[in-house]
Amino acid sequence: GQQLNQSPQSMFIQEGEDVSMNCTSSSIFNTWLWYKQDPGEGPVLLIALYKAGELTSNGRLTAQFGITRKDSFLNISASIPSDVGIYFCAGQLAGNQFYFGTGTSLTVIP
Amino acid sequence: KAGVTQTPRYLIKTRGQQVTLSCSPISGHRSVSWYQQTPGQGLQFLFEYFSETQRNKGNFPGRFSGRQFSNSRSEMNVSTLELGDSALYLCASSLATARSSRANTEAFFGQGTRLTVV
Image (cartoon, rainbow over all chains, first blue to last red; front, side, top):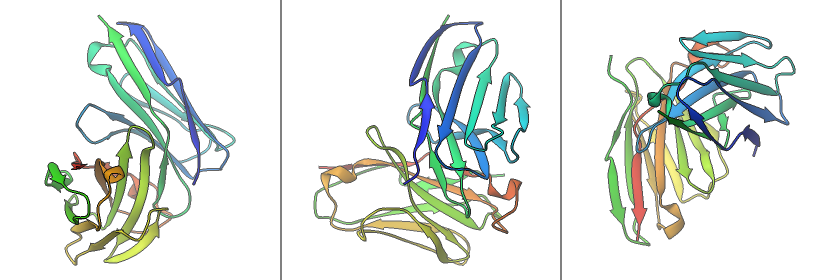
C-alpha cells in the first residue's frame, strides 16, 4: 500500500508555543485531510485541502497542500492544553480511499 | 445532524468466533468506509461501499467482509477471529456523490468499535 511518512512522531511543547508537523508521500494525492484523534475516540476532521498550493486555516490551525502534491503540513499556533492528541494526515488517490500517516502525538505542557 | 454511529462500542470475542460490526452514516451520506486501527500498523483501509456496492478494497484477507444496505447503513463481518484482529474498527462516511467531487470526499469518522479477541 501507499506509505505516508508523518513527522515528527511525537512532540512535547509548552503551552503557547507554535507546532508544525508534516506528511510526505512517494505518490501524488488529489486530496489531503488532517485529523485529530483523542484517546478512545474516532478521528475528527480538522482541515481538508483539494488543490496543490492551497493554504487553508481553521482557527489556530493552518494547513497547506504541497506544490508537488506529495506533501502537506499542519501548523498550530499558540497551543493550548486541549490541543493534546494524535494528529493524522490522510491522502486520497482516485476513488474514495484514504491512506493515513503514522500520526504525531502532541503533548502540551501547561 | 447526527454523526456517524458505530455499534457496539466494545466487544470481546474468542478465537475462531465471528463478529459483525454496524455503522450508521451521517444522514444523506452514501459512502461508508471501514478502517482497522492498531498501535503497530496505524489506520489501515479495509473497504468502501457506495450505493450498496463495494467500490474499493484494501489488502485484508477474505475473512473480512462487509455490506451496505439501501439506507446506507453498513455492516462489517470478520469470520474465524484471530488474536491479531484485536483493534479499533472505525467507520467513516462521506457524501461522495461523484468520485471527482471536492467537498464530497470529506470523510467523517464514528467513535469506533474496540474489538478484543482472546
